[in-house]
Length: 223
Length: 202
Image 1 (cartoon, rainbow over the protein chains, first blue to last red):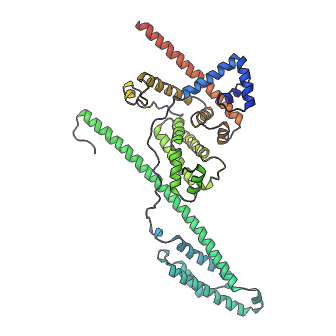
Image 2 (image 1 turned 90 degrees about the horizontal axis):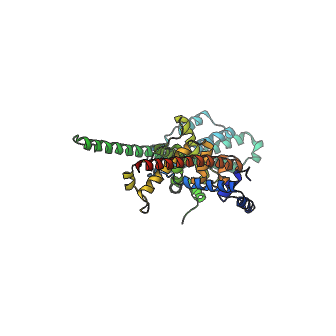
Image 3 (image 1 turned 135 degrees about the horizontal axis):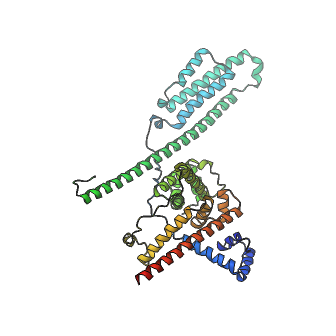
């Protein structure tokens, strides 16, 4: 035991199992050196309690649950933006199966460049209907041209898959935007905390200046 | 009803900002104490605490509950303190708290049962401890701070510092032994100084 003083640490902090505790206790009863060591360690622990931390105000400005409006994109529902993007993606993917004419591709390109800020639910519904009709026409045309493959082709299944894809893209987009909002919140909070700290420093400077003015008798003071 | 850290973390991860605010309220004081004792300066401690909570918030999704939330927070804080010290290229600074003047101390007396002399002695001891701690190797200092002031178990410290349990005990023993020698030497020196002062005045 005298050669393994680290074992005493568990005893001093009362963090050793019962068997170890009994071994140390019986050793200490007979060993004055280890007894003094334990007493010294307990004394220094007592001294450590004197090291206090100055009182301080909170350094944290709580997150505000309500987000301040910032930027036009906040006015557009996340699902609307995502749905527009998903619809374009889905139709683009389906195009590999159905194919498109150049003119219709131009329509798609036009749809993709629509300003999202003005997209409404009605617009999206109309857009979706248009896309499905477009797909239906293309697929019908293809099926008429290649009758051998019609037996195994199910249009409703394609529609369902397109819709599923849209929903999945929509969900992923909402998650991405939600994370983005959180990043913005964090940045705003950091900025707010900096401002609060600067204001505190400024007030301290003001107080010091006023105190100095009072002391020197200089006229006026900082407000 | 008081929610556990784990419940608050789950809610905060799902976007409930108020839950995160509650976690900050619960842990700000110990985190500040750790940062202050590591860095030795109030302004630095404030900056580190703020950054620690921001990092924690950003990293909530990555926190899978493999450790206690508080341990995770302590780890973030210690890493930030380490970076801070490296960036500033300086050793932990000893800041003498305001109010070392006995007159100020009399005004700032926390406990009515404590005399001014006792308060002065406590402040002097506080300063002596902070000096002695600042001179310890970082590993021993960190182990002592986590054990004595944050109240972590040996196992929690080992997990947090990513080292074996026996290493934690060794660091604690060696650190406490050095502190003990330094503080006892200081007390001996003070006693002889008082004796010399008393003898010269009588």
